[in-house]
Image 1 (cartoon, each protein chain N blue to C red):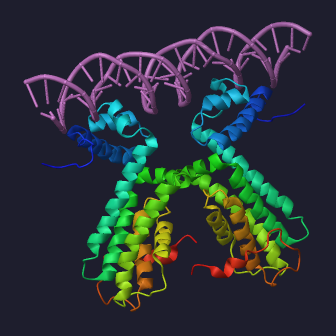
Image 2: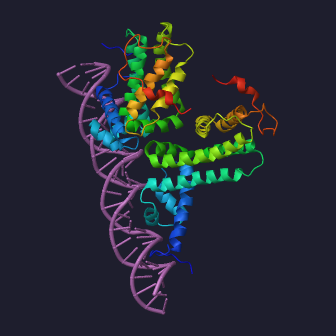
Image 3: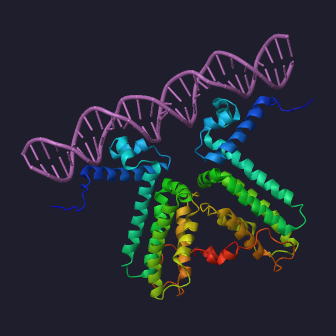
Length: 212
Length: 212
DNA sequence: TTGTTAAGCGGAGGGTGCCTCCGTATCTTC
DNA sequence: GAAGATACGGAGGCACCCTCCGCTTAACAA
């Protein structure tokens, strides 16, 4: 019934399922334990044998890359969803905020990504491209609506985003990053402020106390 | 003869020597093989037992940190030497260039540093502080001589430096970084250019073509 | 010098994780 | 239902991690 024109068999159902399970487990394990986490732990968590894991992902990097790709993809899809939101500025803001959360929950993975970015060029190119497009589509919408200045490229925005997430140590980094992003988004607006919607977090009044 | 007032013994000569050897070996091994390199390989190269290595540096991080500290220190000392050079602008330029070389030869270590910087705060603070001071002293001299603008902080300069070295993939990155640095130093000058000395690499004539 | 002793040395060995290999189990197709 | 392709699991060999302890050696005292 389900034709598969070329003479390749349909992939086995259990293989597909196991691959999925491994990815899911790897995401959890890497997030918690960083890139050094034991692959045997991944297999165990996925409920498959270590051999199965290795068949699907011959090297640690393969597995890692697959997990990473999917994460980036999901983040991009979220941007897609946000495009149907009413307020384009708010949509962009929420997209950036979700990015912070992404970085926050993937603590371990982020360190690994730093490595991946250094070495693997193709993967880096792919993800950067993908995220740039996602950011760009939201940014463009806000610009088209006349709500944001037009002289900032998606790349700039992304770089700014990464820069603001580059604190990664202090306990409060997350709220700091969110605040900085809010400020930044405010700075991108053409209209002074507070026209569309009040922000969730008030600008910290202790901001003047910054270390230097 | 050699008094050591408090009741601690003088450290044993062989301990000192071995510690030194391990550091030397670790520098080589880490540089070549990255942060994952086998500690047993380090011990072997140092010509000591694995136990000796672990006594001196109980964890991989301890060893790594020691190596890193020393490298930073050496780089700083080089800055110190450069302070006695005649041309302050040229001195700064050479310091930055040596930084590129540092990054280039320590390929493996650099990736490791990225990790170290993420996690260890004290080490990061130390090295950043140290490098900032070194950069600052050279920068100040050039500013005092009236050869450079005064509104750039050492931190800014360092950040710019790291940014330019952040390419790390393309085969030609090193020469690119050097060129960018030259341009940057030119930009820092108060006098148009070519007054003190011709640069080794000519400023790329396509510089006007910048993306934005 | 020589003796005493704290400090240092090396590497065996137990533990963990990596990855390969192959007999067995299961799915797809006919 | 049978045949054949495909996937599964985990034992096993290997490398590395790190600890532990008996032996060695340098520092100090006499």
